[in-house]
Image (cartoon, rainbow, N blue to C red; front, side):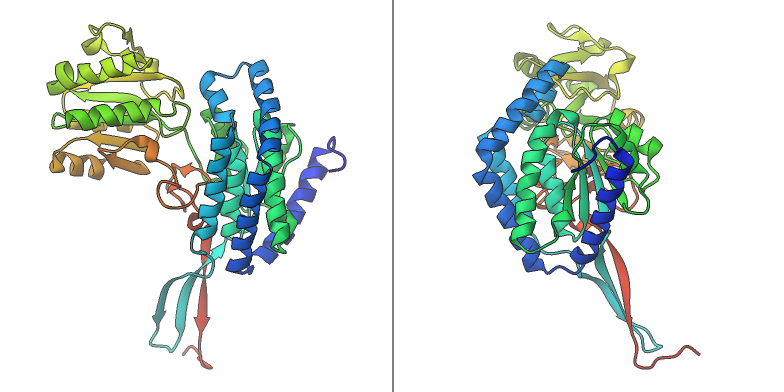
Length: 421
């Protein structure tokens, strides 16, 4: 790519090419898109050695930057994680093509037939941090939904993202689709992000995927519409009717399976009736698993906990740390989540159907769970093949954003010489 020093010119060129590619992708056949994604999956697996080598350079960069262990875990690729990328590409390839799906159809007394059908958004800009697998997930979902995409990965995943992107381009080339359908910004320069956020002529929507700082920057500076993927301040409320073993299993998995993902539990709310029994046992299990528990005064007597302060409520740790407090009842738990949550994912552990119904009814997080690990807050686990992020806003897309959520719709109206009287 020529002239990386002239960022406005570089980004304008990327945007213009993306817009041209989007015009072709809008009517690309389902088979061509499927072929491109299968070929991309094959290319990723064939290139796994080169991808791991590229990732090693990024890990060195991350260590030099002093990234936390959780962030280094997000960044790291090994053969099993590359297999996961391949599986994700194949899963998206196997999903139904959303473009052209008839969402509704009806006839009017005037003689008109009206259909509402899915159509691509156009050009999507994706800005993300650390996790290089997002390159494949976002590229695949945008292609599947008939959108061109401009990917801007984090500086720490620069080499890994480039290696994965090359495989995606191999895929679209093999299917005879425009290579500009999936473009990667070829510079770490932050000025490229500022340009992308204001390219209203070329970009239809921005999807930020990262921490609060990134999302805040995007929401402040963007002139292009944004699907906000805000931080995952994820709560688990242990009700007085919670099952002991299920609660132990779910809480430990939700916190410790992978601490650096947005679905990891960050705050534990415990009904006062079980605080000294099940609550104490759960906290002991977390401590034994190496989790730092920041506890309120009611739990401070448990050996190994540290005292929580006001800053621990409503905090996304992305690390082996969890806040914990006792609440008098389910309504107090709901009030706490409304005040401190991020509308991402929240869970209730209970055998009481009425308590679960109250929790589901009175909270408005994008994902609400009962007796299940919050680490299932993932588009792949929802049957979408992959996700481009989890939207915590309420406009257009909400929760895991898969291919169908990356479409809008248009109305197709058919008459027979029909005129309006």
